Every structure is written in structure tokens, then in C-alpha cells.
Image (cartoon, rainbow, N blue to C red; front, side, top):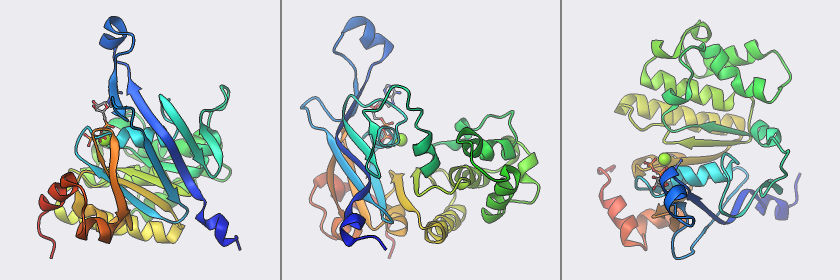
Length: 273
Ligand SMILES: Nc1ncnc2c1ncn2[C@@H]1O[C@H](COP(=O)(O)OP(=O)(O)OP(=O)(O)O)[C@@H](O)[C@H]1O
Ligand SMILES: [Mg+2]
């Protein structure tokens, strides 16, 4: 058993994180120019932490920096400022030669729009095996892939077929299989159910919840749709214009939103009850 104090330590933590993208145009015309993906002109940055076993949702309108925040937390890009740690180890700043395999082994990602993250010429089996291959995971990869595809309730023989042969909902399950095949501790899902119809979406949300419990996952879900939040999170962070404008328990944020922006997001929800 771990000490209670250690359980309180965050699994993933970012402090003072910002990201300013440099576009080709701003590189040419203004040395200091760029687009704020995270943080803002006023020098505000983002602090974000998730404890082991916790489920957190990040919400906010399009362009508010949700995907950028995930990218910085998972070492997929280089923050402009800040420090990121996973289980105490530095994700950023990092050693030049660190290929971050240790982090890939312990995390799984469902990318926003998974279809574009699938190679159309690779079979589903090859696609889902990617994290096993990339991290040189022990065990029989083929068996591991088949087991996770079965768990995702995909048809038998899916491993030998290609992405275009599947529906949108099935492709989301394939993306989820790829994110979980190597048994990560943290699952990060960027808009896992957007663009799916109501029933498919509902079943996928249930499945995600079941897998989280079965695998003891820490879960970060990004969504611009607040109706997803109570189903997949106990805590929520609201983003706007590159910063977190408020965060708290789902009940607190839904019942007593402090920011006008959050109230508007909630008001835009179709009535659930
Ligand atoms: N690779 C990039 N290069 C330049 N600018 C980028 C890049 N990625 C994101 N941005 C910009 O950074 C800002 C935040 O984008 P981000 O994709 O993080 O938003 P988001 O909250 O995930 O939006 P959405 O809900 O539409 O997915 C936007 O202004 C966006 O145009
Ligand atoms: Mg996004």
C-alpha cells in the first residue's frame, strides 16, 4: 500500500505551461510573432494536474487550446514555457536524447479525428499494434491486438481489414484499441465521441467507462460538448482563449458556474433531465 501522501501526488502535472505556435508567415515577418495555442498575450499560463485514478474532463469552445494542452502534457510538442512531469519524471524540459519511450509505454492517446491518424494502407492489426511495436513491448503482439479488438466488440477478423471498411463508430473503437493495447496507466481521449450518432455515442461512452474501471485508468477526456462530462469525469476544467478559466468538481461547475462563459456553455446544453 502507498502512503496517503503519495496518493495525493499528481500522476501528471503541468505548471506555467504555454505554447506559442510559429506559423511560416510569422517566422518570415515578425520574429516575436505567432499564434497562442496555450497561454496568452497577457503572460497567463496554464497549471493543470491529474491524480492517479482520477477522471478529468477538459471543456471549451473550438480553438480554446484543449488539444494543444494535451499535446504539451504528453510530450508531443515543445512548450514555449513551463514544466511538465509524469509520475515525478520530467516530460518537459527533457534531455535531448530522451525518445520518451517510457512515457509512451505508460500513456495511451485517442487523437481527435482518428481517421486521419490511421494509415489507409495499413491493416487494423498493424495500426493497433503500433504502440507495442514502438515501445518494444514484451509478449505476443498479434494475440494482444486480437484480445483488445475483441474487448472493443469489433467483428472477428477485423485485424486483417483496412480502415475504410469500418464505420465512424467502429473507427473510434479501433482508435481506443490502439490507445489501450499496451496497458497504459493514463488514457487521454480527445473528442472521443464527437461526430457519432446518439446510440453509437452512448454505447461508446459506456464502454470507455467500463474500460476505465477494469484497467484502473486515469482518464483525461477533452470535449467541446458538456453533456459528455458527467458520464466520464468527476472533475472538469474549462478553457477559454488559451487558459483555464475555472475548474472544480463536475457538480460544482454545473450547479454553480462562476464564469459567464461556463454558464453559456451549460445553457447551450440540451436538457438532460
Ligand atoms: N500546429 C499548429 N500550428 C499553428 N497554430 C496551431 C496549431 N495547432 C493549433 N493551433 C492554434 O492554436 C489555437 C488552439 O488550438 P487547439 O487545436 O489547441 O484548440 P482546441 O481547443 O483543441 O479546438 P477544437 O475544439 O477545434 O479541437 C488555435 O488558435 C489554433 O488555430
Ligand atoms: Mg482540439
